[in-house]
Amino acid sequence: LQLSDGAVIPETVRAALARRLNRFSDGTNRLLVVGSVMGQAFDLRLVGSVLHDVSEADLLVGLEEALCRRVIEPVPKRGENWYQFRHALIRDALYDSASPSRRAQWHAAILERLEAQAGPQRRDERAIRRPGDPRNEGPARLDRREEAADAYRHALELTTSDVERGYFRRRLSEVGSA
Image (cartoon, rainbow, N blue to C red; front, side):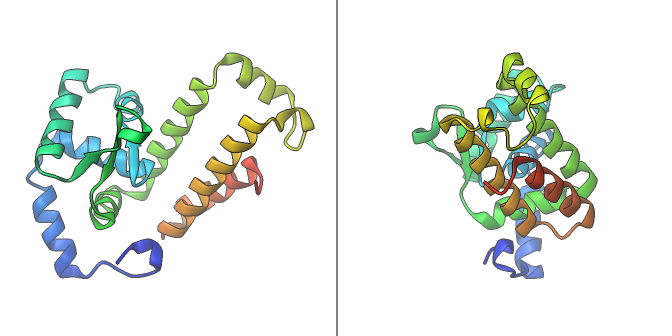
């Protein structure tokens, strides 16, 4: 039963999840909510960069708490800093616990960090070239565009907020239909 399937989480299940998640410290909840904005799997380093006011030590304490309570698990094939939610309902409940405005802020912050990782030369090239410019279409660039387009399509399926839908549609049009 996933929100992306068009189903709604039953209120009894939502209440049970809320009771379970409310037992976490504030720091752990923030880590998990930002992770849920990234999707079913998240990069701890990226979450940490978005939560810039949280120390690395506190981030690790939150991570350990979530791991011990079996809410998340490592994703070794993606790297040592990648984790995933053990169940889509947990991820969906955490995602829904943030306001649409807060989620939009975190989506924008995550995107900003990802673009920063691309490096200044890449940003300068994108600023000069228009979408559709054949120089933008190397294999790695296409892979990133396709990945971004998939993420925005998935986000559109999950959200019910008009504000978020507008944001994701704009971002999807910027990366093209890939």
